[in-house]
Length: 409
Image (tube, rainbow, N blue to C red; front, side):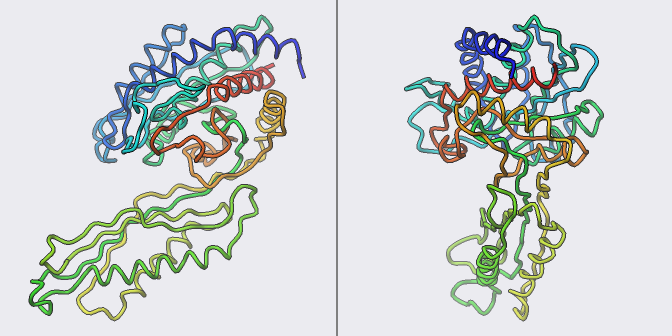
C-alpha cells in the first residue's frame, strides 16, 4: 500500500471537508421528488456547482416525449470526463432522483441541516451523498503530483426510482458512456458485488358495479382481488424455502404495495387494481418468476363468474451478478476501505436493486461502494429524517480517492 500517497489524499480531503459538506447541502436543498420527476433544475444546479471546481458537465437531456411516456417530467443526465492519459476509464455513477419526503420529519427534508455529526435531508443517504463522495474523491486524486493514467468519468443521473432506463440506460444506449469499470452509489461498510432483481406487476381485476342494496346486480371485484391477495401472500411461505448463495441476500419476497378500487361505500366495486413488487434473488429466472405469478393470479379467480383479470408488467430489473472483470475494483475498494475504517470490509450482496445492473448487462464490471451506514434502515433512507454520518462521508471519500489512485496508477 502506498502510504505517502494515501496520506496526501487523506490530508487533502480533511482540508476540504467543510467544502464537501456545503456541496452536499446545496444538492439536498433542490428537491428531486420522483414522481413527479422534474429533475432538470437539480441537474442545472449540480452543473453550476461543478463548474466552480473546474469540472465541465455535459448536459444530456432525455427527449421530453420519452420522459413523459415514462410518467416523469424532465430528466437531464450529467457526464463529467477527466482524462489523464492512456489507460482504462473508471465510471462513478450516483442518482439524484428520490421518493417524496412523506410525513414525520423533525428536520427540514430540504434543509441539509447538520446536527450532532449528521447531515439530514431527503437523498442525504441515497444517493446525493455520492455526488459529493465521487466529486471530491476525484478532486483529491487530481491534487496529487504523481503521474496518472486513464480517465475518471462522473455520471450523475435521474431515473433510478423508475428503473434507470432513462438514466444510465439512456446514456449507455446512446453510446455516450462506455467505461471499463464502474463504481456506483452504495454503502461505506460494504463493497456490493451482487443484488436482487425486481419484477413489478399491475393486476387489474374487473367485475361489475352494482347497488349495495341489491348486491346481485353487481360482480364484486374486491372479493376476487382478496382471493388473489391471499394466493400471492401464500407464495412468501414458499419463497422462504429458497436460499441465495450470495452473502447478504436471503430469499425471494413478494409485496403488494398499492391497492386502488371502488367508487363509493354503497357501490359494489367493479374494478380493483393491485400493484405488486417481487424481489428476485440472483439465481432466479425472471421469465419463470413472472409466469408463476401470472398462473397464481389466474388460478385464484378461476371459476369466479363475471370476473376477468389483466396483468401488466411495470418494471423488470435484472439482478446484479458479479462479472469476472470486477476483481480490480473489489480488491482496491476492500483493501482501502479496511484500512480507512480499521475493520474488515468485504465483498457482499444486498437485497435492493439498483441501476448499476444496466452496466453489467452490457458487460461492464460494476460494484457498489459509496457513503452510507452499515444498513439502509440506519440512515432512514426513504423514511423521515434521512441522514448520513459526516464521518462516513469523509471516510468513504478517502476510500474512493485511494481506490482510484490504485486503479489509475
